[in-house]
Image (cartoon, rainbow over all chains, first blue to last red; front, side, top):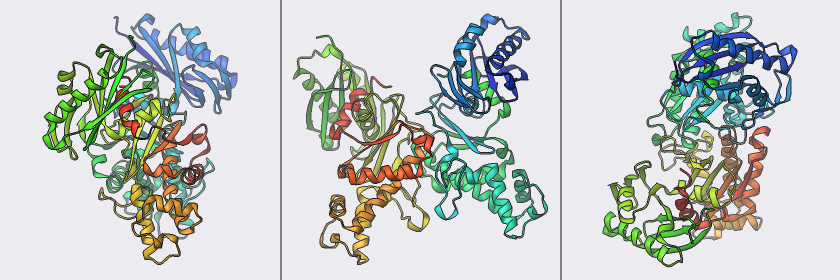
Amino acid sequence: MTDKIYVGVDLGGTSIKVGLCDITGKLLHTYEGPTGTEHGADVVLENIAQYVRKLVADTSYDWDQVAGIGAGIAGFMDIPTGFMKLSANLGWRDVPVKAILEEKLGKTVRIDNDANVAALGEAWAGAGRGIPNVVCYTLGTGVGGGIIINNRIIQGNGMAGELGHMNLIPDLEAIQCGCGMTGCLETVSSATGIIRMAKEAVERGEHTSLALIENITAKDVFDAAKSGDEVAHRIINRAALYLGKSMAMIAVVLNPQRFIVGGGVSNAGDILFDAIRKYFDQFAVATAKEGVDIVPAILGNDAGVVGAAGLNLHS
Amino acid sequence: MTDKIYVGVDLGGTSIKVGLCDITGKLLHTYEGPTGTEHGADVVLENIAQYVRKLVADTSYDWDQVAGIGAGIAGFMDIPTGFMKLSANLGWRDVPVKAILEEKLGKTVRIDNDANVAALGEAWAGAGRGIPNVVCYTLGTGVGGGIIINNRIIQGNGMAGELGHMNLIPDLEAIQCGCGMTGCLETVSSATGIIRMAKEAVERGEHTSLALIENITAKDVFDAAKSGDEVAHRIINRAALYLGKSMAMIAVVLNPQRFIVGGGVSNAGDILFDAIRKYFDQFAVATAKEGVDIVPAILGNDAGVVGAAGLNLHS
């Protein structure tokens, strides 16, 4: 075989996932092993190199067919030089990731922010396949995001795609966000935000089945809403309202063809998506929503490796 | 001489302005003549061709040095094919502008939306020179805009950069916009919005020097604010508040290095810019405003021809 293949690395704090994609973004094979964070950057980078070599060796592909290797990592980095300035969850400071991996592997390596990489994965080979301009939301502990324009990740000055910090919540309802500001989208539309609103409703003594649950999760709130609990429904609506409103803003700034929503919260399904679409429709000017849709992410946890594999094709 | 030169066409309803730029975006020579809108598209396009030929003939450059011709036109068009679907102010429908001009002139021609072209002009050779990612606002009758990422105009699905329709104004203060929605930025932060707020204040009988003016202009409101009129100052602050807030949103979506503000209203100077910067600072998360500035446009009416000339260098 002579087809080019692309390797993606999803570097997490506890495990490293590596994957092999063809030129269309089809995930052909994956391998996962421990990160070894506690042993420091040298060991972690050596682990990556070994897992990548094993990944390819386990298939019928030749090492020569590997056309590029990409890695998604959480932290502050300089993309062009692949230099990690600070990664809090890995405990890294000033690590020349690209240079070290290129020396170990003898291939072109590109690194990027993990949220951006996951967005690229969905855009390239997931729910955005074939669409050049997409904006991805990840609804989890916070609200993350990634902006893909003409099939490329938008970095801006380094903070592009931080959608959770759009300042959208009206003063009277705004609470302080982890970033120090008040009014950020993620104070309402993340799992954390949904849980907070549920707990506050229970504490206020509102009539809701959520009062019977000890440690409320976002899933509990969605389940209660699906069962007809009006308080839970109001909370979900509020989370969806500001998501839809943020998309309406982005629709006149970037006007992507598609919004993709992933992360744990997005598993709630229609009850969430129907509400987001309703509010997007309400707040977006007609010409800016024409031909624009809002869909769930489809790659799940594979978005990271797929997007990382795609870094060398979309940069 | 053998240097390449680039021609830009700013096609307005009453006059056509053409300009010659070098490869750095320096405007070397301009010419302006009547559009002849009333004679139809054939005549207008022939006028463009003649003005462009005259423009070059009037200089010491050879026609052979013209490396590309660009045109900024108001209307709905298909950019890649240069096909104008509908231009309300020219009365055009289904005109293959690019094809006709290329045949007449024997050069590569690109067309784009006039607001995007002006943004490209400022980004390339104006207040954004040397900066790859800028977002431009034009404050006039409405609030227009243009998004330049990696030195290229962002089109999205065709409506990118329509910043005036960001839905930002809280319900209790929102009025209906020309687009049919309520709460659009331009209902407050355009010249029209500023004049409206001033007239409403006068009608309410507020204590303001604006009450003595028959036909209030945006400049009157700025002048009154500069003279210490508190009502005028409050109106300017409100216009600036939502501009700053919109920039804070864009700072976590695209994170451009620079916001450029042009158009008639931007001539107000420091009183406007200081207020915009204050509110941007208030609503933008710290990491997203680092290294980001807000500056006035500098090319004035030349932005259109310069940006049009740059279309063939930035596409």
